[in-house]
Image (cartoon, rainbow over all chains, first blue to last red; front, side, top):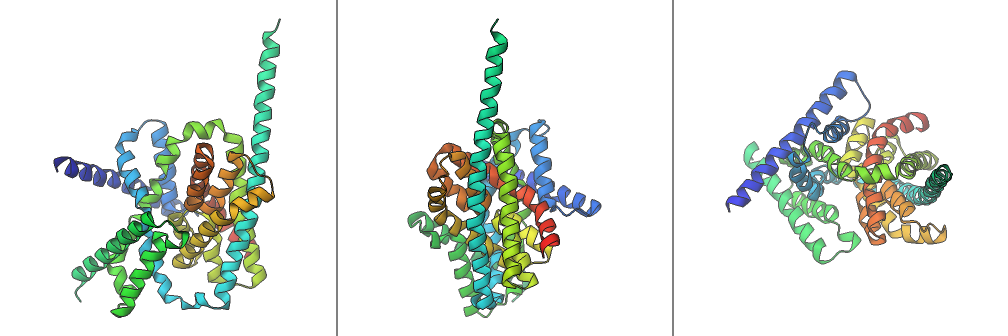
Length: 139
Length: 229
């Protein structure tokens, strides 16, 4: 029981840390009038703070893991607004769906081939580097 | 109804609907039973039966929505955990993310224009390949409708995970790296769980791509909307 309470407190506290980053991000966004959303600025700030070890990862890992595991819950209220848009079940709605479906096919096809292409390039580059190393080592 | 009890009951309704939906999905993992779909349906039915308008629902709902910001920030954690992997494959990931984010957004913008889809609907389409909390933010910023954006994101996710295997087969995309990048950039979290079926590399690749696409997409979205729409 005590452990449960402790874990809950840790999660709440760590979510507060995430909240602070999100808030700072929003302030920066408004102050500089940026197009990038405040929460994304917060994400980048937290990532940088983790990398340069200003914030140790154990300060946020339990809270972040928890939030991400129930992420769906947080966007349900936004989704419920769909009840005000019955027009989605119309001709325009069908076009909306069609545009997404076609675009998703195009995107997966192009990106899959591009990813494979870049991987081969990277491997070749790595291979060349190793060859060069071998040559420079040989007398 | 008074504000506080109304807020509390709406929060409870949402949490219970979510928990029930998550439980059902754990037992029967069909794509059309994903929790966002089932829980939203349950809530809309309850609201319609009791004649509660969306605005009243949001008296409670806004408290849950306020956690969207921190949950976007939380994406820094998986990205940090995968930083080694990211550095090891910087060229394919960087190139793939750029191609993935831009091909998804540009193609949907052009299709929206070709189909004559109206402005607000088009703006809700643009972020369809981003992870949902970010897509909501981007749609809001563009003047689109956040709930339509969520619907778009869901369609892109479910449909992408279903067609991806055939596309890979047809185009001979065999590398787990290419597959992971394609799924993460076009179909976000749903694509990433599909990528897990192709092994550890494809899964890591897909989750890193998803997070990076969210960052790049939030800048690219307004630019694409400005140029093409």
